[in-house]
Image (cartoon, rainbow, N blue to C red; front, side, top):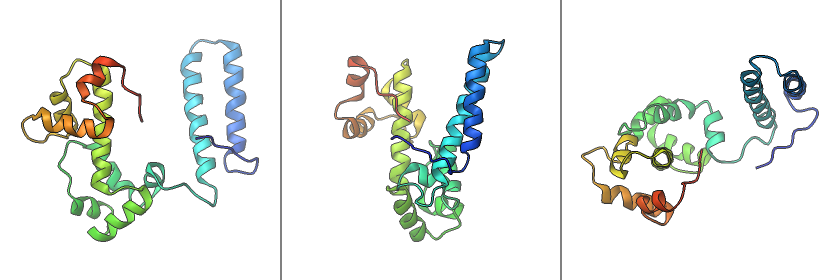
Length: 182
């Protein structure tokens, strides 16, 4: 995705200042320059997102729109804060101060996916990262991200992985580096 900001978008003045500071810091090569450049880059990213999100047309359906939604943010925070927990729709709806059906409908309209399906996708992305790092079996990773709340059953976990990636996780790990997602 490419984001184009207009001169009149919110935060453009701050973004221009950040760019000037980044250029100056790069040319000066002062002590701590690496840390300063990293911080400035993060601030630039935030300013770009703020400018994009401030537009009238808003954000398309998806994770970013859900994360910016004040009704859904508490439920997303719960899922991201404890992905291993066996979350139920009523708990997530309560966090959003909504009735269960209204929450599920609204979440899907905003995020483009049902809440518990979103949680399953989030767990798979966490598993991808852990498998990239190596050192753990598929069953250990599955249990650590919450896809196996009971004693490990690798076939169930592998089936979920294969449905998403088209091959068994051990084949993905052995044959190539996994894609860096999220």
